[in-house]
Amino acid sequence: MIVLNTCHIREKAAEKVYSELGRLRRYKEHRANSGRPMLIAVAGCVAQAEGEEIVRRQPLVDLVVGPQTYHRLPEMVARVARREGRALAIDFAPEEKFDSLPQASSQKGPTAFLTIQEGCDKFCTFCVVPYTRGAEFSRPVTQIECEARRLVDAGASDITLLGQNVNAYRGEGPSGGAWSLADLLRLLANIDGLARLRYTTSHPRDMSDDLISAHRDLEILMPYLHLPVQAGSDRVLAAMNRQHTRDDYLRLVERVRRARADIALSSDFIVGFPGETEDDFNETLTLVRGVGYAQSFSFKYSVRPGTPAAASKKQIPDDVKDARLRALQALLSEQQNEFAKTCERRTMPILFEKPGNKRGQAIGRSPYLQVVHADDAETCIGEIRDVYIEQAMSNSLKGILVEHLKHRIAVH
Ligand code: 5AD
Ligand code: SF4
Image (cartoon, rainbow, N blue to C red):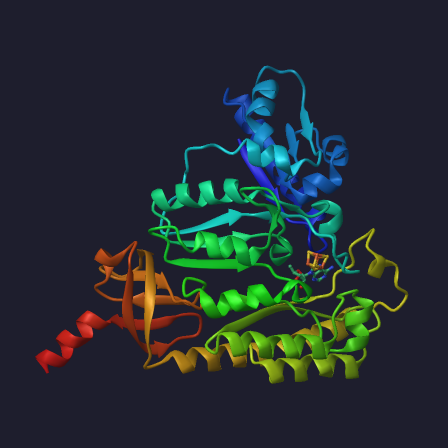
């Protein structure tokens, strides 16, 4: 069985799926002719959005399954295998999916993701998420706590809480009432064996005071925050329906930094939103200079049919978008390198995850999610060790275990 798991956030996703399916057709025919039949499924948000259209256009597809119906896959596969026709499941009922999660964890390695929230009610004018993933839904606190404990029992020590709009989390508390993300973090922080907590992706409007305080109070909450701003000009932010101004964002960053001075920030940016002028774009650059990001993701605005911005008559030509993206990415990568340089000659706790390419080498993550390589550290996999960062490379850091450093000094 081959599953094409798809994302629908930017354009060309559907075309890519159809061209990939064209390529797979010969493979499927070849297998069928040699007596080894196979199944092809399309999953994810393109499946959700295209639904029937995929089944109609590509007879080789056996299953189409949207993000809320993965728990029905076994039954769908069985149905198709019994030759009862093709299966399509694209309804919206997140509660049901989470209720069907297996109790046994397939957790591998020390890092894990845990979905606590899905969907989005913000309706930024460029974005398909509120349509493909539906309204906000938060899982109950007890269900999340049980899953976190299972992950930790299975070896996880660094858990990232996931949600399309994670800090809008309002989940049912253990004795009723709604809990915030900050309440949930304070509870999870007490789990024995859990060393690191993170959450993503946040919306600036939902960065409440109690969440900012959690960054001050909880050492387990890693000093790294993905806080997308998208653009730096108030005019563009308003047209995007981001529900905050440039100044709101800058003041928010200041408050977060006051709570946790060593916090590193990352963001998403869109260039070439309809109607964006050179002056607007320059405001994105000045915002980036003002904040200083450790890491960032930047995209050209991509027309998503059905979203309000897609209907705008003020679309920006592609060559202008290209030039703006290049300028922004040059600045962002300069900032990323600068941040990495500030890590040189510092000692940081690194959670080792897997062996590296070199014999004895291990690869881990810093509190800021940077990839760190260290020699003679293979025995540390699964553990957090102090590492002295010797050198910042283009996309990773190179360090030495502090215990080896002491040895090196003693030898010299
Ligand atoms: N065009 C370009 N980028 C987009 N994103 C979401 N929708 C679009 C779009 N239509 C980006 C935003 C978001 C990230 C996940 O994807 O920056 O934060
Ligand atoms: Fe999309 Fe995020 Fe805006 Fe929601 S908050 S509409 S997910 S960009």
